[in-house]
Amino acid sequence: MGLDGIPSWFLRLGAPIFAAPLALLYNQSVTAGVVSSQWKAAVIKPVPKINKPEMPRDYRPISITAVQLRLLERHVVRSFIYPALQQPPDGLFFGDQFGFRPTGCATAALIALIHPVLTMLSSNAYVRVFALDFSKACDTVRHARLIDKMTNLLSRFGGLVMLSSQPS
Image (cartoon, rainbow, N blue to C red; front, side, top):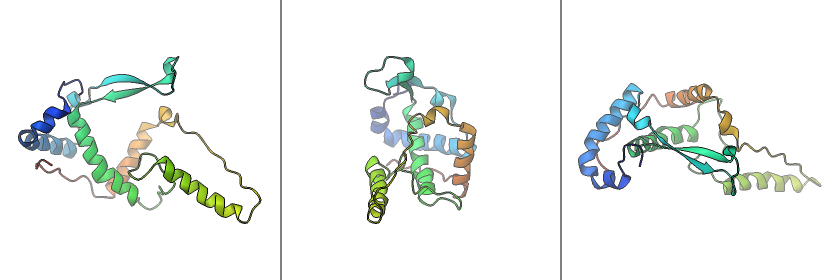
């Protein structure tokens, strides 16, 4: 639960009662492009990046937001972000992206690497593989550029679609 103190089990239990008013709030939020400041307030918890953290840089901050916001985020990601990644606009290619995708995983990345390596080894004595570690890449994200890219992706789908008030 976030700062509002409302646990997910309570919302799940009261879904028949809460669905319509929450859908109204979600639709207004998406239409206006504004999220309530109460939903944006978060509890920041440090989570270790490594097994035995010793310094502050060995932790990453995790924001625990209100359950209502997480539900809205999940809907937006499933309805707009994932489809945009599956059929990106001209000029964008995500075929070599494995993280943060519904079908992305380390196994898929290894398979995508091993296949061309084995193919090259059939006609070459050796193959060189250069690997880059982007584990700290999110520490230096240019948020304005990220927002521009996401806006371009979402604009391909003609904007956002209203949420249903029916509980699922």
